[in-house]
Amino acid sequence: MPQKFIVIIAGGRGERFWPQSRTARPKHLLPIVGTTPLLAQTLARVKGLVPVKNIFVITGAAQAKAVRAVCRNLPAANIVAEPLGRDTAAAVGLAAALVGARDALGVFAVLPADHVVRDTGAYQADLRAAFAAAAAEPVMVTIGITPTEPATGFGYIQRGAAWKIFAGQALYRAKRFVEKPALAVAEQYLAAGGYVWNAGMFVWSVSVVGAALARLAPELDVGLAPVRAALARGRSLAPVLKKAYPKLPKISVDYALLEKSDNVVVLPASFDWDDVGAWPAVVKHGASDAAGNVTRGFAVVEQGKNNLVFAEGGHLVAVLGTDDLVVIHTADATLVCPKGRAQEIKALLKRVEALKGGARWL
Image (cartoon, rainbow, N blue to C red; front, side, top):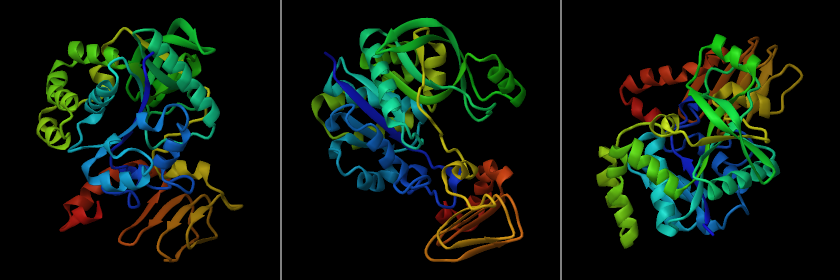
């Protein structure tokens, strides 16, 4: 029987949660929702699905120390830092190498570190069904989220014909992928049904991923060959990654593999899900006052409604007579913006970076 593994991808900068989220302390290392870092919540959510020794976390070099602090219960060798970001295809290739070194027949799930899921039981049941499918058939299983609104910030997968049932869960052929459609198109998808959001959750075997890399992303496959060789020989991984990664193509796993493959199947999620993509999404998860204001820390709102106000370090933030604002105060930076423009924080950060000494605020 192949062993089961979980690989949590804990990279990225979480720019839309600036100024709390920084390069060295991004979104997944913060209690954006709840009282513990999102990465810690992800680890708690997969507890019992696989042995602890079979859980890997892939992160970035700038975050490695903080990630290790959150993942104290994992073996040190299971926390692997990419020397620089090369998007999700490289991370998946690295994950396949790590798992393959432990079990060439292994089946592994790739999960984001920064999503919010409340129903752990349903989450684990869906993952068990996905593991069963990926162990039995040479398929790439993606767990899709049934849309609740015509969101334009997510990729969509059109569900095809019914495929098979595993662990009581029905899976479907993936008909096509659509990357972040326009609002009118997203509205059509929502009305038509048969589409799911691509949540970046995948389950597959080492052999299936390896074959797909060799056939569809040969440059990436060849580039990762020294990593696989180092793992096979028990050599230190860090210097090999440092040499190999700058040469790897920067591409998402969706573009590199999934959209070009005919063996992708979809398992519609039975659990609640939120990727908490920007500050306004936090409002759904926080207790609000009678006027719809959500606050954290020393924050007060007078004669205002539907504001999100966070204050760190004992600093008092007071908001008077304004509505629908995001106000985030940290020790060295403060953000004030309308809720409706919170998605533009990435553009703002380009201006911050251009300031003299701007890198210290990123």
